[in-house]
Amino acid sequence: MTADHDDFVDVQGAYLLGALPQPEKERFEAHLATCARCRADVDALLVVADALPSAAPPVEPSPELKDRIMQAVRSEAELLEAAGPQADVVAPPTRRRGSRSRWLGALYSRPALAGGMAALALIAGAGAGYALRGGDQETRTVRASVEQGVAPGGAAKLVVDDGDATLRLARMPQPTRGRVWQVWVKRPRRAPEPTDALFDVRRNGTATVAVPGELAGAEAVLVTSEPRGGSQVPTRQPVVEVSLD
Amino acid sequence: MPARSEPSVTPQGLRQLGDEELMQLVQKGRAEAFEVIYDRHSSASFSLAYRMCGSRAAAEDVVQEAFLSMWRSGSRYDRTRGSVRTWALGIVHNRAIDSLRRSVVHDRRRASDEGLEERFEARERTDVEAARRDEAREVRTLLDDLPPEQCRVIELAYFGGFTHTEIAAMLDTPVGTVKGRMRLGMEKMRAALTRQGTVTP
Image (cartoon, rainbow over all chains, first blue to last red; front, side, top):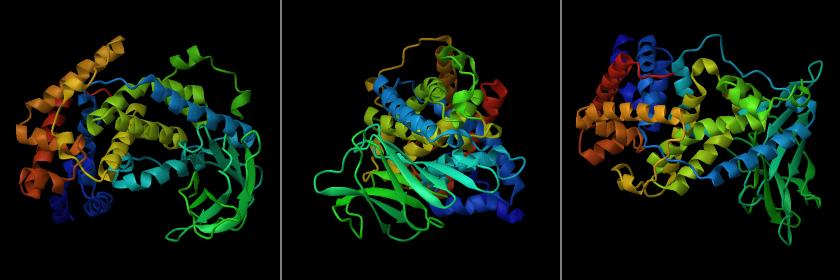
């Protein structure tokens, strides 16, 4: 595959700088997986990619940014703790195979996968909630992302226990007049499927909702605001999104 | 074991811990541990995002997205792949590129420098920050020492978020040449960095 390697040498720098258009990046990553020389070259150039951020002139973020981030983090941490001991147990990071060199790390953190990054982050959130509860029975807690513009400080998680999925929400606003929150199940390459799980929020801003139907093969559970009685097709952007692996 | 029943680490104690140890607590859902991670890496993250996005509002959105994703995906952090700082900056860089490419008008002036005078600079509060500034200066110098055409393509790609085809069109240069300049420039920087021992892993 030497001819192959020579074709790819000039792509290495562009790859590490995040400058490859998607199709070319995918081709290069496929090649990287088979070419030890390219991996070694990319590994060596990583020091440059890692040093580049420090060439940015130092600018301080506002204290408000920290407040916003930490508010979301604290409310998710509270929910996680409220989920009970199982949810606090964290599975070790999923490692693909024994040793892995830095290039794989680079591969994960490079924009090649940027499109998938958001999903990855949430799936990883899912991983953080895995817990074995004796035998083969598994309880899984998946932290959701909540649209903070609609639900400031809002947090949600999906608890999957032996096939039964329950969505727990906190600091959720009531749906606006004449509307109701509706749960949807999203499968790959399909429009979200409506469920008959329609709900309001308790006075203290919490809600516990059973998610009906089969979640196997689903990529996400969503919550949107819909007219009373629910919809067949979402009429609003999701306020809560739980990404599943 | 539930996080609650662990001996509690005081906030002061947390600040004594290394990033890797903190990340273990973050993986258990400990918000206070994450706060220390934020305090340590938010300035570098914000500086990078600001350099790329060119506005405080856009940079704050990028940093917020990046840190929330780090919090939620803490279990994905793997120390064998590099430091927490590298991991964080990698996520910030990706998010900033996403944000740049998402914006309908990929504003070319954005990357074509510099408007630095508008940026209020960080105060040097600690030795660590001063050391970082020195490092920044060194890396900056390395970039500036490159042949200008190499420096330019690297900056447009890394900080501007442009693809090599976009850069080729902007500079009216063949794509192959742009790619070659990127690699040559990075190769030179690599040699200089390893020579100087500037690289602090």
